[in-house]
Amino acid sequence: MDREFAPGGTNSPAGFACQQVRSQSLTGEGEMLMFMRRHPWVFTILVALVSSGAAPAATSSARLVRTNNPVLNGPPHAEQSAIAAQDGAALGKQLAGTWVVNVEQPGFPPSQRHFTFNADGGLVTNDDLQAGPLFVEHFTIGQGNWIRTGSRNAAATIAGQRYDLQGRFVGTYKVRMNLEVDLVANGWSGTFRIEITLPNGQVIFTSDGTFQATRLEVEPL
Image 1 (cartoon, one colour):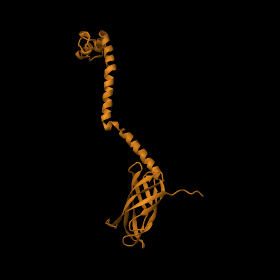
Image 2 (image 1 turned 180 degrees about the horizontal axis):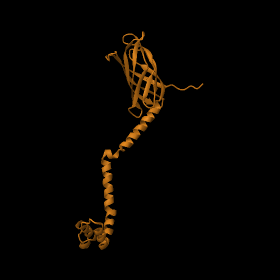
Image 3 (image 1 turned 90 degrees about the vertical axis):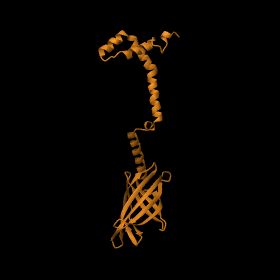
Image 4 (image 1 turned 90 degrees about the horizontal axis):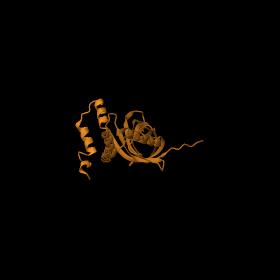
């Protein structure tokens, strides 16, 4: 190959074009137009260089950065929030309604409760008479909230008051639970911990247990 026109040589058209661009400071529009009129072939060569080399290189660099950066690879924050909201709405739709809940608690006979979930995060349980740590007590309706912790999982907390059979306030109760929805069985199961407290907030009893729930089906007349 003739040395005068080697691609990397300073005497080649491409090399001369690059030298011309580097050596001139084109600050005004008139100077730029004058330069292009005097050297029209420079513009043609630069366009060819950019089209054939610079653009693919930039594309490759961007692709490499995106491949090696887990933050860039993930969806934008707004998109992640939208996905989480959609997943939460789907779980809420699955949980919404009333469930017949069978409770197993060591030291107590098996019992049954009704839980009613709202799709937007509310939870209510029925009231009941319970054999408390001191005597038989009336547990009021439990009210609380639930949150999504996984695609089919939720955590919930409910609380209520306790009264003796004479109607005197004797304290409160709180139940914390984790549950998993079973889409095939149209039910859910989980574990719980109940805390019994005195009016001053002192915890006097805790107990763990499990529950298994099935949906209360509508039975048309």
